[in-house]
Amino acid sequence: MKDSDWNGQVIGLKRGAKPSRKTILITGGAGFLGSHLCRRLLTAETRIICVDNLLSGRISNIAPLLQDPNFTFIEHDVINPLWLDGPVDEIYNMACAASPPRYQADPIHTFKTSALGAINLLDLAQEKGARILQASTSEVYGDPNVSPQPEDYFGNVNTFGPRSCYDEGKRSAETLFHDYAERCDVPTKIARIFNTYGPNMRASDGRVISNFVIQALEGAPITIYGEGQQTRSFCYVDDLVDGLIRLMGSPAEVNFPVNLGNPLEFTIKELAYQVLRQTGSRSSLVYKPLPQDDPKQRRPDITRAKTLLSWQPQIALEDGLRNIIRYFEEELARKAAASLV
Ligand code: NAD
Ligand code: UDP
Image (cartoon, rainbow, N blue to C red):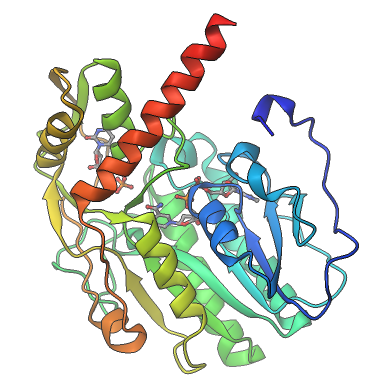
């Protein structure tokens, strides 16, 4: 199904799905990471309920799954309570726009998504006796004074700026996960996800890898914010999804935050040159003002994930970039063909 064919109808809980299957609820399931999780977790033993308000996600990300009787899509905003019939065994709470321009477009809704969304889903987990995993973020470290960032670093976060709705919303969700685990015995998991990229990101998402690849493919100037000396560590989506699934399956004691990300660190300028090299583009570099509170460095310490989950990223930036370049080439070719019709 194309996004233009979607008429807003809710595809309700499907009859005929086998009750013996494990039921997994994925909020934000039509987004970038959520759609990969839906695809990976829909197996002969599972039934997936995907909940999304389509704010930054899109139906085309989950289109191949919609015909499956064990896949259900519900259009719903997690700031409101979610009532579901039947059992739920696991909840992956991925709902929240992750791109700075998108989450800053409506900061109050972004904060509500993290805080009220966490309360609503933790209540649901308690009612159903489900395990619940929170997609937290490296943004809880803010503009870190420590590198690499271990989970016991409390962070350096501005409560009063354009990124605060996201950073503080995610921090408040972690607090709620802690308190529901302690006081209500809800089995919780917290993944602190570092910058992740791959197919199913939107061309217009606004994050750095999608921006650079689209600009390079279109021959447009590559927009570097600041001098490009700030660093990020980029994880390919398949590695990240593997880490999330391992964390969900980890022993009950593992209810504290676990960093998931690729520890190899690059400056944004290095990333720009890498994209130019791999696309063969002749785009120029243009320098734009650095956004307020933009973190200067970010690199995960993944000792916990290595020790507790036997997990570490396998896919090199060069290989991941090759995949997302191919994905966007195909998307641009489809758009060009559609505009000729
Ligand atoms: P995304 O924007 O592609 O996906 C988010 C999904 O959540 C979208 O489908 C969106 O429509 C949906 N959504 C947003 N607000 C909602 C609401 N109130 N109710 C229901 N659905 C809502 O982003 P992503 O990169 O796939 O990120 C997924 C999750 O992982 C987010 O919670 C994000 O904070 C977290 N995360 C991602 C990264 C990353 O680099 N991709 C890094 C750190 C954390
Ligand atoms: N960035 C950039 N050009 C862009 C988009 C982003 O230089 O077109 C920079 C941005 O300022 C930040 C880094 O790239 O320093 C990563 O930005 P992104 O929005 O992907 O993620 P986040 O800042 O949340 O880590």
